Image (cartoon, rainbow, N blue to C red; front, side, top):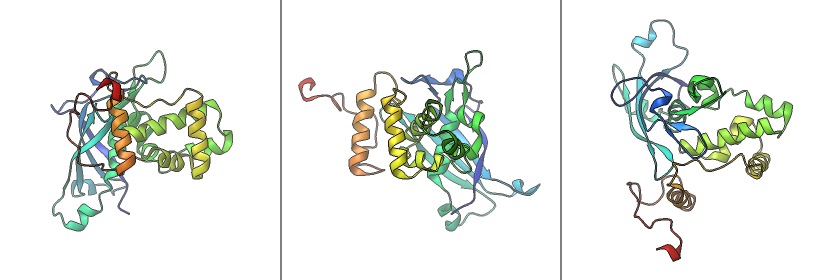
Length: 236
């Protein structure tokens, strides 16, 4: 297992800092930044070590057709880079953290939306040291906890992660318990597949492909999809 990282830079493609006004709104009311360039560095460095410590560069893009963020570039900058250094990069975890910097949620009526990373930090969004396990143990599957279940589930979907596994890890739950809580959140109307309005059928089609073929899917990685993709037989 490689070192834990934290975000040190989050920028739009033009080099400016993102705000919620740069986000596009999805069907569940949260906003996503379409594209970001981010940098990570190892946590808990000694003072001055950050000058020489390796920096991971990542570029992510939100695919409206797939309803998730894709890592389009991952690189390592250091005084010297070896193959073993590249193999230690935990791409899936960094993608989730980068995605959380691109997902904006409004926490109260009187405040502007903020990114999940800004409001929760890297420990919570990496699911390491999350407070949610204690919350689950103290309160059980009550509505406020189920809303957190739905949020973690949707963030996992948006960041190309296995959503049920993310809930298990974040809440420190056995697989069967996590599945029951997810089902209950869905029954209570708290869980809807996040997507850009008008792209629901496309996202559903890609989800089915990923479920059948695994994380990477068949060779259908290019956007856009054919116009009739995901349509019912009678609509083709």
